[in-house]
Length: 71
Image 1 (cartoon, one colour):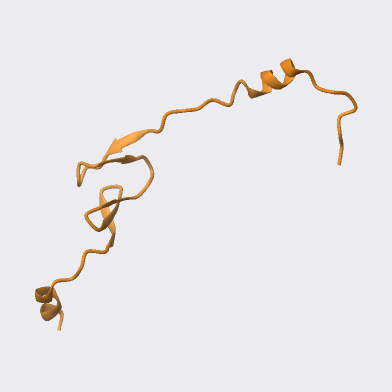
Image 2: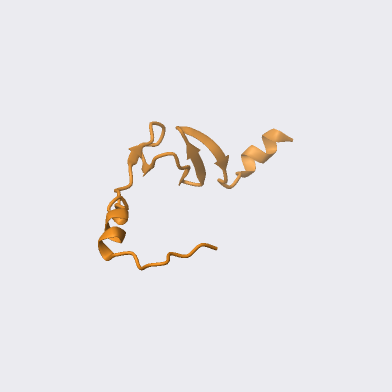
């Protein structure tokens, strides 16, 4: 593996690192629920996983009335 023959200066390292900046996260408001969430991420609201305003996973407990209708 190649190694530098001479030491790099601190200024050279600092020039390279100037582009490493901390950025603030972008937040959005969900159109279906009105909740704020990180953009391009799914988020949980009341036992349901939402992505782009649609329910992806529903983990709410099933009630007895719903169970009788399915049978």
